[in-house]
Amino acid sequence: MSERSNEQNEQLIASLKAELSQIDSAFEKPAPPLDDFHKLAVHTLANQKRRWRNELFIFLLVAVFIVSAVFLAAWLQPVMLWIVHGGSMLVGAVILTLSLRSPESRDSHD
Image (cartoon, rainbow, N blue to C red; front, side):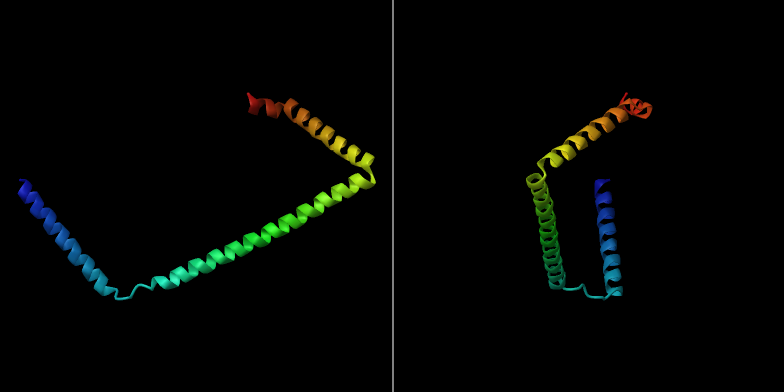
């Protein structure tokens, strides 16, 4: 019984190989060379690195501008800076308190 199934499996494998070779011969289009794909991958990675570097530079430029503006405000009007920071903390605390007291938040936090 096992010899018979082995023969059937071998015949099936042989017929599949024959059919696959027929399909390969029907589509005689050669595969593109891998060098082109490698060049495309290297080019894509270089562009991505360049874009990340540019985005990092823009981020750092904006961050330095914001920090320098805060330091300038602290230097020129320290009382006003304290008022703005204290007010923003109070507003955040009030918003958090109101959002936790609302009926919708009780449903989601239970």
